[in-house]
Image (cartoon, rainbow, N blue to C red):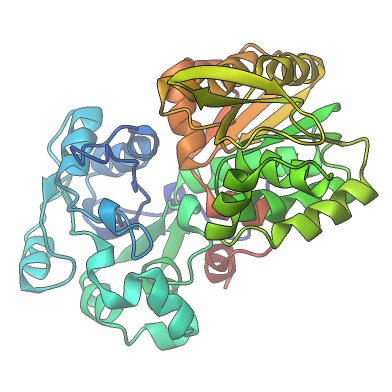
Length: 412
């Protein structure tokens, strides 16, 4: 099913010689020690949008973010992003470590036809961090008085948004420029919505969702919707999501697991999991064994009423086999969230083998979310997947049937 979006594509616009402001999402996973980018997926998928504008001889300024208040360790300048984008385009992308101050304004005014500048990290601005969005909930028309919009908007002829992965954010850079500038969407935005619309509204069956990772709010956010509307035939739980469902089913995983979930404020999801298990007992699959480190070695333990008091950090071989069988039968496979702590060699087995099973599938396969895409990059060839989604939070909300602020703003 083709996604029908009620706004125009940038390719319908005359951009030659025009100053064009482009909101992209190139927020990338970083190595915690070196702060170097470890997955270039979002940057690579953004490159064709910028390349078309360069070919049309537009004067292009890119705005983007990296990190946020809740992952401050990833809040860095965008200089490496500019280097990677330059490589992908085969032409220089200048970088100005200034968002909308005097240096940025001067550089924008001096842009020549076909030139590209990437402005500084949007998260340098208070009005662009997630805490501001939560504490000061503004409507788009009120955001036009924010420093970013009132400073940059007068410099441009057109605003383009190609940042579907940030579509859930109600921030000035995402929803306010549409109020004061002619606006259009980039091709990546259309592609992302089209792929997720296929998964949500017209999946071939059997349709299997693999939901794992540590951000289980994402899994629970979409689980009820895709089960109720028949999008998913089976939910394969793993990662922290799997642990919560095992506890909800009455299994005792030991004090360490309980304390871990308590420390992350995740115990409240157990009641939700009980509700889902009661309503969909045949459709929600849980791990049948788990892996933990014992004396420095990986050991696997079959699920019983009471488990040893260990830190369970991956699914076991029996679960991998069971889940892989379901994946092989599926016509549609969607995955969000790794099966375990795949960054550690001891616990990469579950994610590696499940991801390889999905990559080998003949069905329509979609992976989304930063960690999930990083795992796909590490363990598979990305061209083995039907679609690599750049989105995380936006993807979850879309599949949950919620209206996204960006879509509303573009339509308005």
